[in-house]
Amino acid sequence: MVHKKADTPRKITAGILQFRPVFKDIDANLKAIKKYLGRRKFDLAVLPELATTGYNFTDRNDAWEVAENKKGQSFGFFEELSVKTGGAIVWGMAERAGKKLYNSAVLTTPEGDHHIYRKTHLFFRESEIFDPGNTGFKVFKWRGLRLGVMICFDWIFPESARTLALKKAQIICHPSNLVMRFCQDAMVTRSIENGVFCMTSNRIGTENNGISSLTFTGRSQITDTKGNRILSFNRSDKSFRVVKLQPELSDTKKVNSYNNIITDRRVGYYKA
Ligand code: ACM
Image (cartoon, rainbow, N blue to C red; front, side):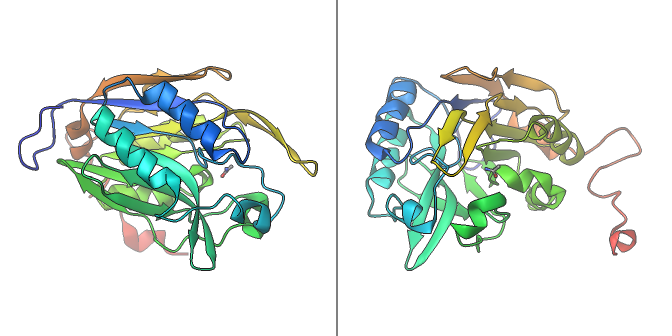
């Protein structure tokens, strides 16, 4: 990406990682992430939800053992990786903040900034493990790009992506650990109804913690502002793949010469 001041770059190289994290083994997961991304060049990469730890914790204490704050090894690791690759990286983690424990996604930039989003809508047993996120939906500005972040199950609430679009996100970064089969299709609609790019990075594999077994659905994808899948994985791919995209296409919300998906909304009729 060649960037002048804060102008939106015409094209960027955007990538998603699909892999199988090893449960509660941060060292192994960071090593794998370095293997996939370390020699690549990109502007923006999105990794799965809880990419550093795996997902299927038995309880809060189980997750607390591998949760990190900014002093933990993962922040430094991603800062280095971001500098090496030249790109911003959105990665999922279990975050300790005082006594709170969040399912978070961090946007790390080569400048050494870490912007944190904490998952708003917790899924299934996550509510016994994590505290509900308190950041709200945020759009981070970086080198002329406007990057929104939501995590996995946030997808089922159309308000999540809509809020990010109303806050002018061009690209929605969507780290995921999906177990139901609907999200990939729903994200096509999220792209169309909001006129944004969506980058859903999902994991693969099964995690059995002795209490429950979860199988993750893969099929990571990037959808463009018209809902076309411009990159898609199958259920078992393990790789980091990139595509070129034009972020400015998100800045027009016109459907045709009459309709605009943002300004045509009739908010007064949307109240229950
Ligand atoms: C999910 O939110 N990990 C399904």
